[in-house]
Amino acid sequence: MLLFHDVVVALSRARAALTHSGEPNGVVVLGATGSVGASTLNVIRRHADRFRPLVLTANRNWRALDKLADHWSPEYVVLASRQPPDFAPRWHGEWRFGPHALVEAAAHDSADVIVNAVVGVAGLEATISAVESGKRLALANKESLVAGGSLVVEAARRGGGEILPVDSEHSAIHQCLAGTPASNVARITLTASGGALRDRSGQDLLEATAIEALAHPTWDMGQKVTVDSATLANKALEVIEAHWLFELEYDRITAVVHPTSIVHSIVEFRDGSAIAQMSRPSMEIPVLWALSCPARLDDRRDALGFDPLTDGPLEFLPIRRDDFPLFGIGVAAGRTGGELPAAFNAANEVAAARFLAGDLRFGDLRAVVEGTVERFGSRAPASVADVREIDSRARRAARGIADSRAKNI
Ligand code: NDP
Image (cartoon, rainbow, N blue to C red; front, side, top):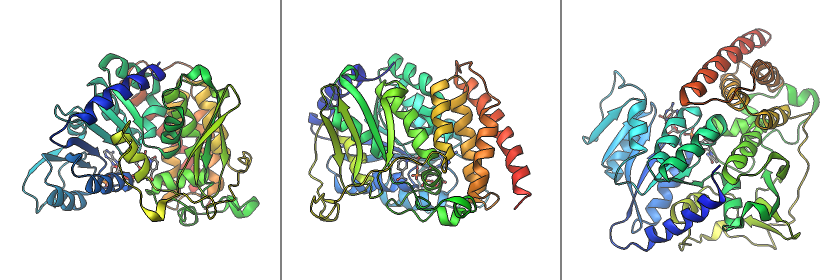
């Protein structure tokens, strides 16, 4: 498996990269038109002496990509979908189209860092491409590790690539560990804001709609991850992500609700000492760490500073597993392994999309995800094609269940 050895390798390689003076480091931003993409470009804007965007990508939103290209003048841009019929960009640089162009960009020869901020399992091939070609991968796209964890780790071994987590919880763990071997870790605790539905229960929770779920109390994020945060499916995805990133068995990974999102994660070591990473919620902090690690660049902004007098008390609560069943279903899928994590991810993507479309209520999500996952077995995917096959089968099953539930609304 990846990890501590690889993280240590990553740190020494990063040191070399960052002391290399002259040209700013080239950054490929996959998913540049999204929320993490915007955070990444904000970080790059403040550190233009260190980083420059080399390639920017989107899926369908060519107008937003056009504006970004006009502003940043990258080497080229990619629209992962086909060229749309009404395509008439203002930016006259090079446009590439299709999912293969996304994968190519992830292995760009002159790139120093690839930021994968694509949403969903669509980011899997790009993740593999980046680490297989020996790049530093700043990974926000947790779905690729959930669906294809062992394949990503093997590709990183083969190609010598390194993964720097962008998810705030995993960035926190990475920072707390500072290269300490896994054998010294007793337990890691991921924190969860609890999402917009945290204080609801009973019928009030079961009937919650996506509009209510989108009112996130602490983070401003893309729609899918905001829904995942409200259902706590996000925390299950993150437990699986942590398992692969930090080479920890599931018994050593736990999660708690921490409503104010100040403590991003806690690492407890064998000797009883626990280290936490804290900041007010901003994705720009983990993005900067993933780009600059092991250097700490000057980036303090007053509104985001941590103040123990005003940011306390720090409250932690257990996850209400009965009320938020996707958490337990996802963690169980991770523990069982085989086809289940990819099936869980696919079912959750379908459930979140149908919830967002207004077809399902919160109370329907369990049936869609659980009813899908239980159809899958223990044979682990041996290739990306296997993951794709599991993903399509799970999507079909999940859509079928979602259709039958949608009729009840
Ligand atoms: P957004 O929905 O805001 O943005 C997603 C980006 O991915 C957009 O650029 C979108 O392009 C692109 N995209 C969507 N579908 C595809 C596809 N099939 N192929 C290629 N590109 C695609 O998502 P977020 O920025 O919120 O999240 C991105 C990832 O980061 C997710 O995995 C999420 O879980 C993770 N994450 C997000 C956090 C946040 O604060 N937002 C926090 C921690 C993790 P287009 O604009 O054309 O649709």
